[in-house]
Amino acid sequence: MGGLGSGRRRTRLGTDECRALEIGELCDGGRREALPAGEVEWRALSGGQLRARLAYVVTGQESAGEGLLLDYRYWPECDGPFYEDEIELEALPGRRTYALCPTCGQRVRSLYARPRALRLACRSCCGLVYRRPEWHTWLAYLREVAGPALSELEALPRRTRRRARRRYVPRPPAALARELEAELPLGENELALWCLRLRAAGLSYREIAELTESSKSGAARICAAGPKAISTQGLIDERTGRASAFPAPPEGDDPRARQAYLGALHRHALALISTRCRLRSPRSAWSSQATAHRSPEPSAAGWAVGHLAAAKTSSAISAAASSCIAGMACE
Image (cartoon, rainbow, N blue to C red; front, side, top):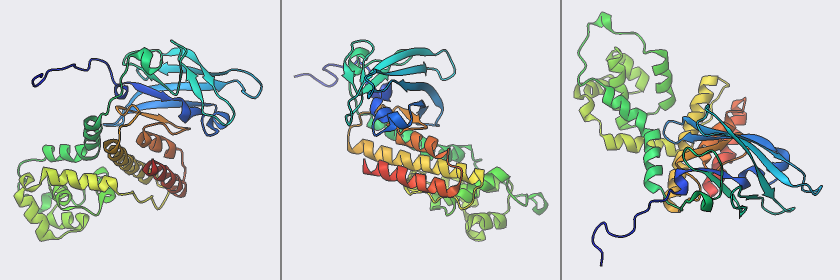
């Protein structure tokens, strides 16, 4: 019998480590006829930076006996050089749409691009294996949801010195005030973090209590205890709990409120993805978010943000968000 560390080691890439193009998400359900052109974006789970994009156009009419083609232009480095190619599609009325692999001609539902590769191909031609990236998805989710709060905790001074009354500022910076207003009400550790942040910004205990909806004596005790009184695990739990709750839509049509709502919706969608990923093995590439502004891609979080960003009013955002989250929760 082999000992610890013996046995075969995986040397092939997994589908979660490559970018995936799901043909069904572009063509099934009448989307090929209604939206024959669009763009797919891959964004990082941590931070949401744009990593790559692909513009496509589906040409041909199956009713007229013409062959369907998917012409695409792929930017593996977002704004760097691109690669152009076409993919043959195969579809029958009322049936699912398949792609013929440009390399081997096999009929598949998903095409992949390896890191730094220009051409899309099937899983076999790319030499990929299926893999369940539970730890990768959960770690990226924690970085997205709790990372900013932990960074603020690290940046806090070890102690805040008393100031003369005339040196206190009457109100916090506008950006800090908007961020706090979007997070109310606060949990125990979130309240402690915000009290220390506002104290470091130069506010008095009275102003801190009014902004955080707490008491003046409570704010004084928190500031006296310092960052050591904040539980890191408790702060992570509060941030993940906040992300798992469905965000309330903005009341008005303020662009800043709409952007804050989209960010909260993005974190909520990531919570659904992380929960679903731990319950079953995903078939999609979870290491990169594939989002299409016209059709939902496997990464529902990025797609929801891209899809809802097109809504112009808060009522339209609320209606679209309910349908998006309901669809992801049912999968």
